[in-house]
Length: 367
Image (cartoon, rainbow, N blue to C red; front, side, top):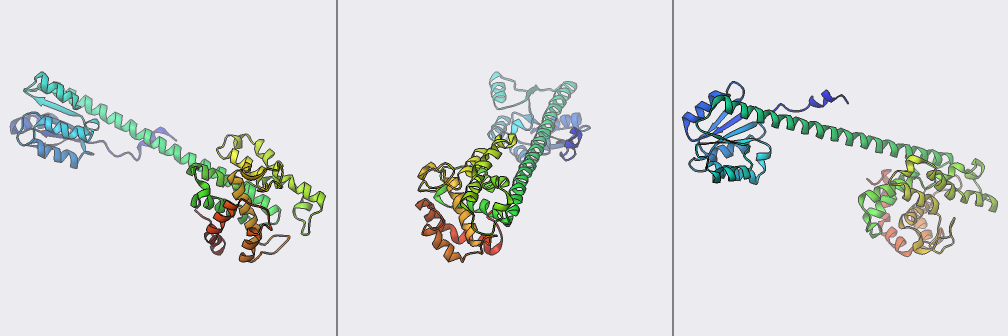
């Protein structure tokens, strides 16, 4: 991005000097000093001056403030500005004939930029005020540029994240198409996983960022199928024992593939993706593969993806079978006909399933 383009949308600088003084002659003198350079507004006491500051803080570039005034004096005005931290945004100049140590000390403690003694020396006060106004405006411009740069960097980072997500989805979807399944499968696994972690106690202790990474990792659960021959991957009938052993290697192959992608290893989702790819066919009773993990040795995210994968396979048509009726699919899961799952996982899934089923009814994922 060209630096000058950053200034295109920055609003013009404040251009108004507010003179707060109960003496009309003093206001006229200061007006005459600054009217050629700035828009001038006046207030005859501190209360009116404070109201003008609060109402027009974005337009005021400097405040020239008298000390001794009726209704609300200059120090009281400064206290009110200090409470709102406005003196950090608008420079305030105390213009007074009373320059006692007590007044000056409190004025500076409250954030006054400068104390100018009456009677004012025109060229001195003009130079001091103009220099400070220019400094404040330059600082504000720089702050605006930094804010816009940060916004642009965040936007670019979001694009990179979306691109990475798109590439991951594309790779995973391509593998699903290769095995004769709908590309919607990986999206549903993502959505089911996110829903279970977000809307059930199974996600307790996980941050929103963790859940997003786990859901992204779920998309890659079958990435290892890229290494399985078509004859086995797309076989319509039952696999032989030898073919089944080859099919089972997709878990290890997926983990190895992810491990060999440098960019993936630097991503926050990597550890989840590796674990899910390798362990989404482990079983609660320890009779799964490839590592024979048992019970809580299997991470909760790998367990959720495993159940989501089974559910989606049951209620969807595949090359080797038609879709089961929803109630029949739930019965098969509950009675352990499709693997042994964590009882707590089953209980939470059955509670969440009516909402998960809507993903299929409406063809929309959980957002």
